[in-house]
Each structure stands twice: as C-alpha cells, then as structure tokens.
Image 1 (cartoon, rainbow, N blue to C red):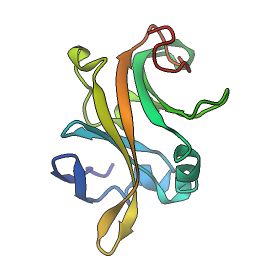
Image 2 (image 1 turned 60 degrees about the vertical axis):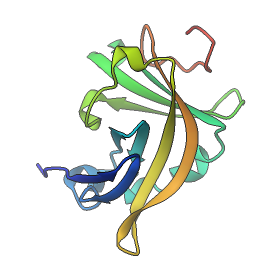
Image 3 (image 1 turned 135 degrees about the vertical axis):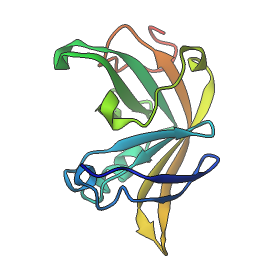
Length: 148
C-alpha cells in the first residue's frame, strides 16, 4: 500500500503523490482536510465527474453511520445544484486523512476539487462554499436545512 503524502499551504494543495498510488489507479477519490477546506483529490479516471460537480452552488459534507455498507461511519458529498438529483459521492472513512470535529458542524468551509498535476502542481479544478453536518445516517441526500 502506498503511503499518501500531501504538502499544504493553508487550504491549498501544493503537492501530493496521490496521482500514481494504488488508490488513484483504482479510481477512488480521497478527501483531505486542511486550513478550513475539504479538498477532494480526483483520480484521473474520474476527472469527467468534475463537470457534474461544477453545477453545484455549494457542497454539503455529511457524516453519519452507513448501515447499508455495514460501516459505523461514512461521508457524503452532496453537490447541491437545486435539482431533484444533484451529483453525490459516498466515501468510507478510510478515504479521508482526518475527520472534522463535531463542533465544526454547521459552520461554513471551502470545498475544492483537485485533479492530476499540471505544470508540476495539482490543479484546482473547482471551488465552492461548503457546509459540514452530522446526520442520522448515510446516505442522507438532503439539501442544507432539510432534516438538519
């Protein structure tokens, strides 16, 4: 298993060996948290999904039990675009470098999506306002303020 390395400058992702790891080659996303930002590392094979993500006005990150997958916890990224079927990702806790604290729920964050390096650095492909919340279960699939 590759040891994932990430170099930060506050919320910015300066460097990472993610692109080229087993996880990236398997098409799995990775979520890193630093400097008040949720940063989604997008595998090359999943880069077309950024187009779907870009329709969002905001991103809602939900954390809760994930019984359908037999997991104590999971993460949902809901790309809220005002439609009945917004783009959504569900991640296992193993796909995060750390968990936000319970007291971080309800405050505004920044969400960024990063794709494979261009000109030697990871490419910030998307930035949106973001909210973090704790929910009774994953999937939650509800806009902010609905069932919070």
